[in-house]
Amino acid sequence: MARLPNPQRPEALLDEAMRYVLHHGVSGMSLRPLARALGTSPRNLLYHFGSSDELLVAIFARIRRGQQEVAGRQEAPTLGQACWLAWRALSRPTGIKWFKLFFAAQGMALERPDKFRDFLHGSTRDWTLWVGAEMQKAGLPESHAIELATVIVAGFRGFMMDICGTGDRKRVNASVLRWTEMLDRSLAA
Image (cartoon, rainbow, N blue to C red):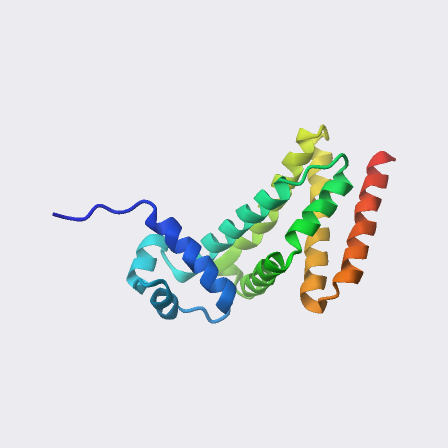
């Protein structure tokens, strides 16, 4: 009798692959060592994910959803304060590891846009739409919410790139705090 496919298996493999990539990075990722570490075969990974590139895209989409869950739990009376709380949650050491991985993937995707076009556009579009939707819930018109969401996503990425590259938490935190105060002042004006 043939064995029925386990619908949870791809999700479990994706979780394990995320942990592997977090530890080993994305540059030069190969299916054989990954499959060996996950206790499966390269063929099984290809069956579930299509290719190593598609597996990476799935990993980054999962990371993005996790980050959005963390950021979405931050409730505050103003947008700037919500951004400050989200920054504190996302810039913890584990979050910085994920952002380093994201920046490595972004660099790889920029070098190979033919393979990672969806990732390049999706990683920005998904965050911008998600942040914009949160602002629309708070009463901002859609066009204003998307413009402001673009500023917020770009700001977070710039600050994350800075802290990932320099490790200067004190300076970057002070800058983020100043930026969030400016956000609140500009919205009040």
